[in-house]
Every structure is written in C-alpha cells, then in structure tokens.
Length: 283
Image (cartoon, rainbow, N blue to C red):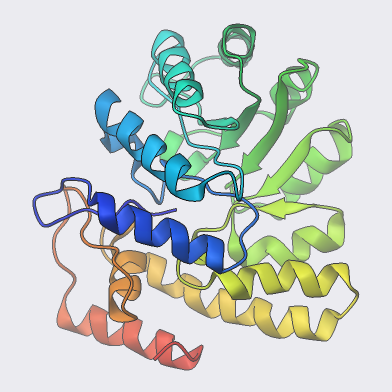
C-alpha cells in the first residue's frame, strides 16, 4: 500500500487512515505498508513505527497487517521487525540488503538470524529491480527449512523464477506474486496470493481476479486481469511511485506526493495516465 505524504514529504496520517479503509472496503485480504510502492526505505525508524501503528489501529484486526521491515544490515532489520511486532503487525516482509550485495551464504545467514530473533512470521521479498540482485532460488529453498519463514513475495517479474519457486519450495511456503499483471498466470500455476501495487487503486478488480478464478469463472477473471495489465502502464511515469500516486489523486484518493528525490509529472504524462484510467473505467 502507498504512504500518503503531504507536499513537504511528511506522512499524512489521516490520508493513511483513509487509504487503509478504502483497501479494506475493497475486499483485500491483507495490508502491506512500507513496501516498495509505500516508499518504505525512505522512512526513519520513528516514521516506520507511526505508519505501522496507524495502519494496524485503523485495520482493527479486520485483515492481517504485514509491513516491510527490511534494512541495510541484519541488526537494523531485526530492530525494525521487532518494532513492527510491538506495533501489532502480524508478519514482516523483508527485502534483501541493497548496495552491498551479500553472497548467497551471507544472505541465507541474514534471513536465518532474523527468523531466530524476531517473534513474527517472516516473508522474504525478492525485488531485483530495487535491491540490485535476485535472491537465488537455492537460498529460498534453504531458508524455507526455518519454521519461522513462511513465504516469499516475488517481484522479479519473471514467471520462470516464480515457477522455479513453486516447483522447489515446500507446500507450506507461500509463493506470493508481486506483479499484479502476473497474478492470473500465477494462480493458474498453483500460486495462492498476490501483493499487487495495482490494488491501491483497483482493489475490487484485483480481488475479483482471485475470487473468479477460485470459483472457476475464468472468463471473468481474464476480463479483470486485462484491466490490471492496462493499469501497469502508469508505473512507468516519473520516479516510482509517482505514476500510481498521480492516478490515485486523479480519482479522488488521498495519495499525496512522493518523498524526494522526485519531481512533478509533466502535463503530457498526466494526460497519458488519464487515458489509462478512462480505458479501465475509473474516469
């Protein structure tokens, strides 16, 4: 989920409450604050705690809250995850450290140390476009042997990598699709869930893909799927997540601004976003 910010880049707490209610009313099965689309790594420790507690309190146990708690070091990540537990989170989603790329052995040790020291279920987060590297499949397989590691969110965009996870990881490990545009193909392969940025603006459509697939109405699922595919175009504008926040603002949601470094989208970019929103029936 996105983090609403005011023009100065500070957290818009009331906006965050509104987005939380909007997503729950849209039927989502869980909330993922402080992820990539939520600009998680941009926030300091106190801001992270405030964001998590706001979402937890507004959600009121209606759905699980699983925030991103990744950091540059194992020590920092454990600290952020413990803060999340204290704030009432139900699990922690942890991207790998960036800038310094650990070896597979060091990365496995990183995740195992976190799982040993945090009393929350741990979900790995594979996101090569932002981390700068991929979590090796073998590392995920070995990490899945730890009882406190319950899943992985795969935002690689690679359906091959996703299939390799499904084929090699134990059934108890949830392999969660991170690309909304790959949600339906992932369900057809045996996937069970997605954490999709597109759900910030079209939660009912993303949930509808899942519900129609489960009941066997593949034509309806396919029709909704292509609306998600159309929406993914807006991610290409500006500094991520400029495009999706602009789209949300256009349809009356209180998304606000992106914390700098970021600049306003051009009029031509806003026009293209508007065309996409009209195409899928939001304007």
